[in-house]
Length: 123
Length: 146
Image 1 (cartoon, rainbow over the protein chains, first blue to last red):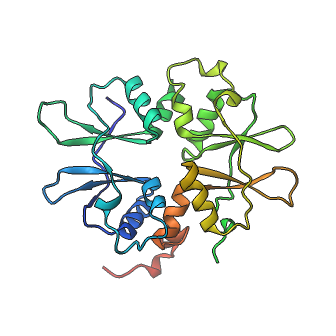
Image 2: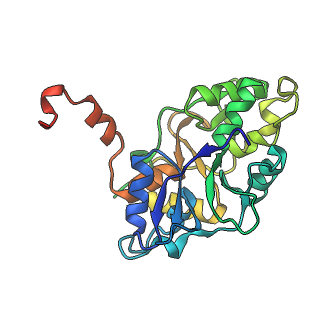
């Protein structure tokens, strides 16, 4: 998957939602990957997840309370059409790319909806 | 009280229903991948082309597909004077990432802005719009000595 971007914006599971929102704004991004102390990926927080927390005490609610679990992932070998289908079906704009080695949970990067539109503009 | 007008993005980009998806893709790319509002020739809003709606057509002949076929039809009239809580409630219920804002005094269904989930995140973060851009524009003498 040549379109994926290596690395990701991350936060800890105990990070407050206010801080997660600030991380997103400072980095001009609409997602944040949540990791635990062992640097394992727990899930992803989108702008939608933050919006859904509106009305709660953002300094008390933690990242782990609102994350979307680490469920929808792709590997570098996933066909792009399949990744697009997953994004469309689940209404998510970012997919976590993990290694396709058995048992590996290492995060390699993310595939963003912008990267696909960029490719469509080039084709 | 914070109103929709205070947080919405006034810098909207738009296309016409007959524009090709190729044009929409290029337009979106040139504008930081922001969604494109579809307007009628008279300037009335018809719908919105989102990023996710666009990628469904990956691999197809984009020159032969029109914006009207890709757009989500305009459904909710959002007044810029609404309290922001009302707009957030609507976004939570509908799962829409973007709301088109129309000015009831500017003519029928004339779009004047767009409110995105990221605008709400910025509001919830407590960081004002343009804060970092202002820091970058500070004159050199304002920078801290090393």
